[in-house]
Length: 447
Image (cartoon, rainbow, N blue to C red; front, side, top):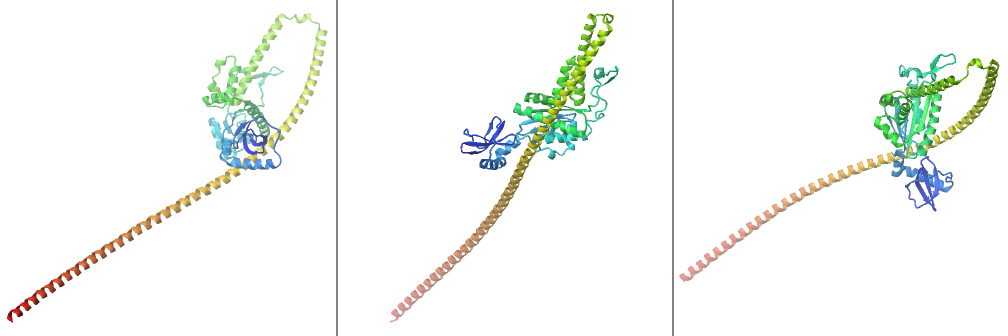
């Protein structure tokens, strides 16, 4: 089985196995989050390390690796009646995806709330699907209209030489297949699913024949090529092998028929072959036996009485063995049912924890997204205010520059006017000086 390292301490490692258990193993240079393949262990962690490991497991499941383990497909399960449904299951046997394989399957899934199947155990999903199929009338005698005619080979000869349909109380058929990365896991899973299906059908009150098989990935791939489930393909190929002329069986035609009709056809073919074999043996014996008149009546009566006594003795013994076997089977079934119920409850509890962790993580993510939006909004407002401040600063600087330019121009004009006044004053003084000199000269000449 597969397991994930969730805690390492004092040379030991705590692993979360694919069946939901926490197990103590020797640390072989493992790293937390590493996925390993291991044999089944019976030693479980107790005490302080168990608490630490359990806490680590919860935190681990909340991490990216835990989510990867939860959402990664590990097994594929299919169920066929005439509706064909395929379930994708993770390593914890929880359903992570459901899809219809044919039109009846689409219609059926339309009646089932997928939220009632996703994240549930595969056992709960199978039970819910079978109950919905029963409620929809697929197990009724008239659910498919007239049953496909399979010729007189379908008839059973009674003691009065009259004929009756084989298994007259069987009103439907279910075939379930499981395919997993681990073959033993697949076989164990299909065995439990068969028990789940039988218990569920028993609760519906229908007489339904159930076949459950484990298949490999090659079979799943081949079934997908036909657009059907591995279980139905396997059943039709079984029909083809049971036919006297296998080439007369149109695989694609039979893949569209209900499971009930395919099962009846296989039984009819096998019964026909058995009847032919018995007929040949009887004919051969009749050709070599002595005439009946050669056997004395008393010997015949004695032989018949002895045979009847032997037959009765064998019947009594068989009845006792059957009762004993039935009792043992019932005891094993009850024990298995209790174990399955306990395991289902544990897995449901683990699933609830995972869902709670996922919900918390979703809320945290939502809060983080909201905070990011608020930060982005605040940054944008800050940027806008900064741009406005820059524009106002530039405007103020421009106005200040304009005032300074105006002041410089006025100062230059004032300086120019001052210079002009000084020049005019200088000229006036020079003019008065000349005039004074001329007066002085004139006065000098008069003397």
